[in-house]
Length: 540
Image 1 (cartoon, helix red, strand yellow):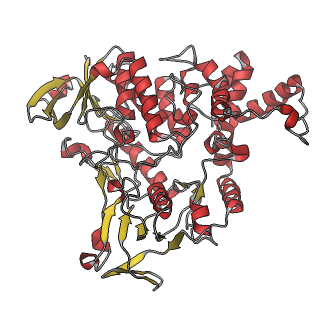
Image 2: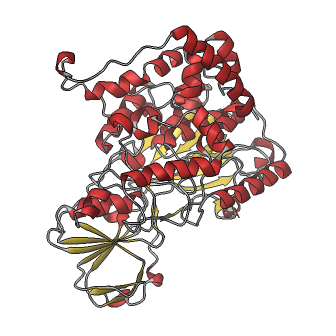
Image 3: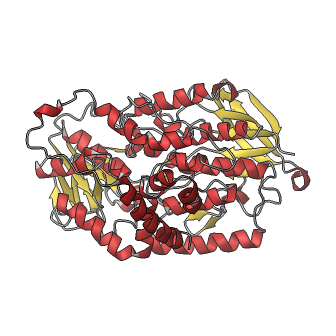
């Protein structure tokens, strides 16, 4: 029987895994190689090898309501898109509230995880750890939760850039970048246009002589600020929107791209990619278009070669006297402590059932949590995986036979490769809400709109037409939280609260015409009909 669980890593995935263990009556021991929680979100003055690192200006791409843990709404006063320091504040509150810190062994890294000789019957693992002072220790655990993420090993493809060995300037990976110190008045080239590349180009452009942003294929640019100044990911991210997108994928893509191009023409700015908006995560940047239009950032094609202090681009253009090159070229994922047999791939991705369980194990006592990516925050994804994994560990839920899992992995891999622009650096893409719902189905926590329509129509309206926040997965089933309903109804209040630093008197709003209030009864009748139709389509 599983009781003792080793959790590797104390970032977002690790913290929610500790809590999931405690919720199921398990005994977690978390091993964290650093001195603090937070993982990626803990800013470090100096890069720490084999750990995720961020730069000082990092702000959440997702709004606080979309990244929240399902039973821990963020404080209303926190800004919607939090600075990394505010993310750390939220994580500390979470850890303190649920008493997670006492289960963490800091400054202890995991050197090796291997099955015990009697694994086929016990499912146990031998975990070898090493403290900062070099002291090693081995202990046996009933289950393992791997929560180390995928931003620890920088991908630096120097072999793709002839002449770099003679480059007279300095080059670094975005993993090493902290702030603009030392870049004042420099000519800087940023290679790669993921969110890090866009952020760093904008950051440096405020002090540099000129910044050039080199991109092979371009990207769609999305602002954090949506209609009426509200968080963009709280708008158009409902279950109804998802249903329409599934029914009319091409139309949905065209409509979103048209809206993005109405902000600025991506082709005109040299940024239009060959893929559609939903085929790859967009670059989230509020400032990049403004830096381009002001000339502070200049978009360039892929770098062809280095020549001393000059860079030659694919279109033949040359930039002379380049001082610094920043490679924002992504990361390689690595789990050096795991047996090689557990690191087999299916296409670009690890061979994991639902991105969590290795299908080849005779006992399902190892789970990978948080090694997944979707068009939304990681937090709800990792939390759902952890809730599922712990119930599998306890024997409350069963996995399909190995052959069934392998077939499912192969099918999902093919689907994802066809739908998304997958690569070695982006191998773990999923359809956000459908993935959450599929795992929630296994646990028994997926909200039923049809039942809610009969029992609580007002709540059904929020679940169907409102933003799909994680609180929806605490309305019913194992882990049900009594505060989930109120958390859903109060989410817009928490969105609005940070803006109330200066309230404009209503009398001064000259020319504002009050909106007519529609009849609540009529609205409910219309909603009921629409909801019934959507239930039929949504559950197909």
